[in-house]
Image (cartoon, rainbow, N blue to C red; front, side, top):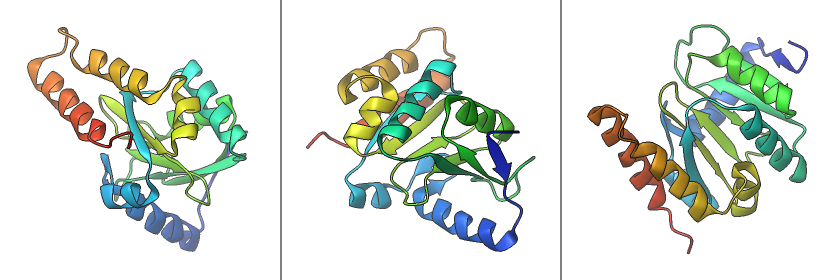
Length: 178
């Protein structure tokens, strides 16, 4: 992989795992105390990452001066890679995201200026300052949340999935704009 490098140094993995454990509550959610202290916004989106989404995330990274990020599996024993450092180009984001599937994982820069959580399943979560999040999602917070609500309430979902997705929407919508 030309846009990312696997980290194999165990002390560096342990350091990054500690950071990830501060950011992520379990493998599927952000630590709300940590997010609240930072006064961040969290936007859920459909699982997976498209070229367009990776391009917007890359633009947000570059606007905020992030040329590289870490990716670490949030599961204790992932299938495949555990930790990478990657270029925040569109290709670097897509390549790294692909390498981690089907494992839950989180992306973040060294200064922890934002975090992108990809639990394997139905949704992803982006957390960061409002300006970063709006660039990364390509709209304002209210529109991004509305888009996820429409996705979550799609009548094609089995009831259990729809219920789960709407609970995610409610949980992260509770983080207000005030």
